[in-house]
Image (cartoon, rainbow, N blue to C red; front, side, top):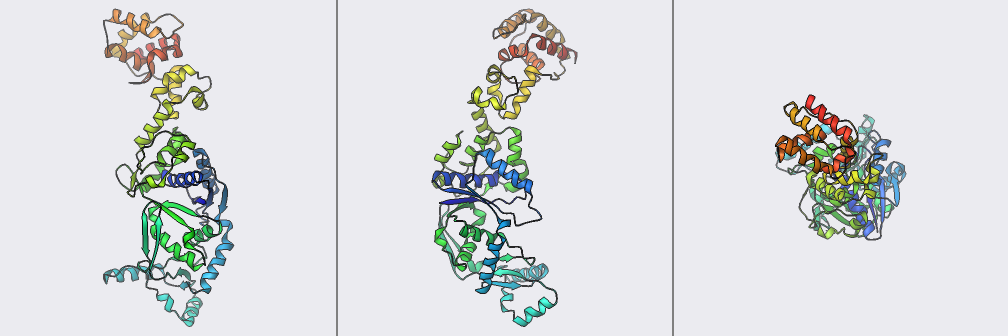
Length: 444
């Protein structure tokens, strides 16, 4: 068994294609198969080495290792052989229509209430007509002549699927500039690189029918391939996620402090009958089951992912999280803030609260109370009992209790309306910093 993930290095990975990478990798590992990373870099103008490196970095961050790597840009000779074979068999034929001519044809067919598929006019081109066209400077692009009938298969997610080939335009496989398109290149790669299982989005269902026809035309055996088409991934509002890909790149999630374990746990279960829970990579592999995937579109919910990440972080030990902590941070610091961290990117803020400089908000109306708080503050060093001793004494001096007592202290010391327990933060701050914050808040 061999599966593949085939990104184009024309941008960074987002949660949509990360979901496909995860599905292919987990399925391969779960069944003892191999995982191929294929870089689809035939688009020379848009493909960039920094994007390829970004893709590899993202996959490594997720913990998805590959057994093999292939670049389509290094396989052009293989595509050329396939092109010549299809030309020789009469299945690949030259076309000379311009975009404007094709648009006019589509419009005419729509007005005549006919499906807007290609009319195969170029199949009737005589050798003399082709010579005249080329003599006039026209360079042909090449279409694949589809078979009549249907292409059917048993899908691991969608069950029985069938594509009516006569309802589809003959696809362009080679541009006028000689560039081979994905539809052909992917077939050649899958056949020659030993791919057996293909997991991709349901937007490829029609493409699968076409590619099965191409496989047969190249002398291959379509039944050697097993397909699984995952339903589309929508945003929270039910719209196309593609409009929000930039905000949901793995690069952005990583920089924000999302844990890769949360991303894999969530994307491997989204749209299935299984509720996402924090899992190790090994658990995600063992629990991955395509039979649990729904046939309906799934909705990507950032709040759900954040909640999953929160649960993961709240269960992490000091040793587990140590790599994310600032230099000098202690286990007591992690235990103090652990329940208030959704992303590891937030850890630095709480480190500034206890060991750095923050600008407390203006609390001039509380100046008298803050002065009382400074006078009632226990002597150094502050410890786990200091908060209770302090607030008890301050209650007697000020006559305050409840929110009127605690809220001004929290805002003055942390700059936040809510957060970790102050009894745990006080010893980490130290008496000198607490006094400074109280004074600054009163004067701001």
